[in-house]
Image 1 (cartoon, rainbow, N blue to C red):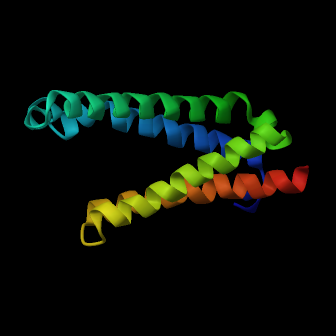
Image 2 (image 1 turned 90 degrees about the vertical axis):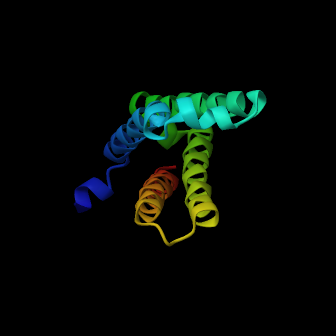
Length: 135
């Protein structure tokens, strides 16, 4: 375990898998949340905005996965890479806080998602920390 925790390249591969899992999860939103029916309750504009935001999140997760898997050395060794790694950690940190703010703490599924988001925060924060020691 210690070897893994001190290997930022391998941690970034875990990060890529993490983000691909979110791509799949978000692609399932229409079915999981019955969006075909549920979104009918919204105005035309809000219905479109919800779906567009979800599609853009899917794209962002694909980008995060791609750069984590294929550009790991650049993420670890350049100022831009450090900025992106910190930004991904902050993305998940804010998402963790938003989970509690919007969904509260009284739902087991919501709490599990919170922990998944915290994992992403810690993963990319740790990679950022390791990257600082490399530079």
